Image (cartoon, rainbow, N blue to C red; front, side, top):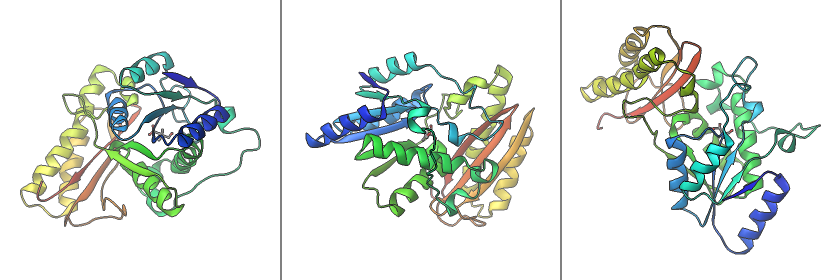
Length: 283
Ligand code: PAF
């Protein structure tokens, strides 16, 4: 597996692959890979001749006081794991190569980034769409793959690609969970054993919500009340949001008619975890 650190080198390589008629898949990551990332890379392998993973802890998607400095990093391990699932290139640029002095251009997707994480983390999605847009120009992929745990991120990226006529196929992949239900996240390493146990309340509340809907509950407020009960019963847990939204527009859904996204962000101690499930009356 080759490691490319320079933006210009990555662009030249991507041009060469395209001239040879090769199909390129990109899996953007911030590194510290877990099984969820590796599943995305395996999926990418089935959709392209060349699989590129980017590893870049993107400073502009972290707000003041967030965990940019302490975000876990282990490039050596990431390279080893990615190699095992057949990644061809790890693209790992420096922040100064991505955002040289004088940098001043950003991509903003408006409506779908306003609620949920957009409300609690101002500027976050502008940072995400900007870096993903840049990665698309650098790696020149035909397809790019994102996990559905960051559901709102995926909605925003799909919107950006559509609105800016980017000729890239965007694939989502279902959340990969630990055996006990915890959604995989690089931030799970922040949890101590008691917090790890409490964090299970997120996936538990999503399962309970789906059960209520299957049993005939159609009122979002009633389902959310049960979800909140489960989450708030956990020690040292604070709900940032628990909301029902239309899965494409992310507009509020007061009734469950057709698929509805139940999206959660919860602080367990100081660690903010997100999780979600698309609830469906027929599931
Ligand atoms: O989901 C992530 O890890 C990041 O938001 C992404 C898409 C790699 C952009 O930095």
